[in-house]
Amino acid sequence: MGEHTADVLEERSEVLKAAHIRVAWCGVVLLAAWGTLGAANAASQQFADTMVVNARVYTVNSLQPWAEALAIRQGKIIAVGSSKEIASYRGPATKTIDAGGRLVLPGFTDCHNHFLDGSLSLLQVDLVGAATVGEIQRRVKDYAAAHPDLTWVLGRGWGYTVFAPSGLPDKKYLDQIVPDRPVYLEGFDGHTWWANSKALQVAGITRTTPDPPGGIIVRDPGTGEPTGAIKEDEADDVVRRVVPPPSREQVTAALLRGMQEANRVGLVRVISPDGVSMRGGDFHILDVYDQLRREGKLTVRFDVALRIPPPALTQAELHEVEDARHRYHDDWLSAGKAKFFVDGVIETRTAAMLAPYADDTQSGRLWWEPAAYKHAVAELDRHGIQVFSHAIGDRAIRLALDAYENARQVNHTSDARHRIEHIEDASAEDIPRFGKLGVVASFQPLHAYPDDDVLKVWSRNLGPERAQRGWAWHDVESSGGVLAFGSDWPIVTMSPWPGVQNALTRQTVEGDPQGGWLPNERISLPEAIKGYTLGAAFAGHREKTEGSLQPGKLADLIVLSQDLFKIEPNAAGKTEVLLTMVGGKVVYQSPNWNAGRTASEERH
Image (cartoon, rainbow, N blue to C red; front, top):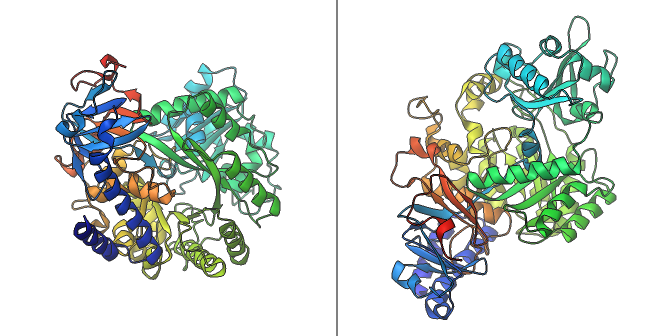
């Protein structure tokens, strides 16, 4: 083992140049070596609760990348190996799941998923894919007619390209179909909202209402009247405060439905930067998660980051984040991480850029004063609290990296694994800093899907030179950074498989553009899988217990309908999950499950 381990460590050191990342990854490798040998020598005396056999198991364990079967006991993997080796773990009560030669992977983690918002949206009007104003009107009108009891008509998913050339909606289109009830619709990216006149009236928004700090109430340039378009969270809050909040029963029902969908697409853990402000110690949403945990109803593991709003981190907020960390801290529910919005988005020119937008004189803006943000990050870092920073433009990304570097120097910390979310347009000088500083690069691969939004609106706003830097997955990874992948649901689908495909191709499902958009930033299939598994686990300080299939780790796995290693990259998005297991328990089985005996037929 020694010579082989040395080779692995040498290879890892070439990839991960930052010293603290190199040490952490070496710990993963040593754990893998111990687990592989320990299973062969000691675990053979234990009977498994469950065995998965007749499989092509891709373990994401560099010392044992492939196997045929695995054994599970008390929610954890106790052995991984050949069918013959695993057969010795069969006891009189062991359940056997025959995978029928299918590909088995570690269960996927969604590293950036607004789970509660997405789950609630499943109960609202769905505007995703509506290509015209008329189609949006039809859906809203039908939904309103089907729900006459609702005091507000809520929905989400409309896109900017529907409203070309301005890219922004107008209240008149909603007034034409629902004039007597407030209508409030979230855009697909979660940064712009659309209100009808009734919603503006109830919220008290008039031509004299000032823009809240950090938000924009879009106005008619001739009359000054609000158009119905609302930009960024601070302006959304003006309307949101009069929208009836969901009841505890509605939140519970939404979470249960959302977990069903997550399990269906192969998710076993969700990291949710929900943007929930904990000011005042209000933990009622987290308490709903916790009640489901205590009742044994969670089928997805959750990490929740709590939003810190500008202008400054208060001592009360710091104490509340620490309180959340102490209250919720097991394998099923963990809180006590902090989320910052450093800027907005490129489509609405609110992302903070180092130079003006190509089609505008302004360069976006920072949501935080740099000194206040750096101080807040350093204080959280000093208390051992992981920080998530939404940073899309190159100026915001640089500020986040500067803040993390400052915290590291001031507090003498080295393995905080602070994260930057989205990283859409980083400058070339800042790319190597992810690996150097140990900053996790939290990307959402489907955001780089080269449709009209990216190739026309996003690219137009940046200009051709900066557009060539979009979503630099390969550059970050090859310079030593750790990739952690997610969806940003409900902004895009929660299913990771279109994201996997886009990470491999950077093409539309029709194959455009030929050769891929910025093809040098594509990554390999093993790298893409790692982004959703071991890389995601590393991002959450969980690489010793999750992220790969090896002895001692949680038995979270999925069985797929097709072998990703044997198909063309442009077919990956069609992958169906046939079975999802969390903690050794089958939480989802597809109606198309046909591999040998079905899980429901196995002996318990």
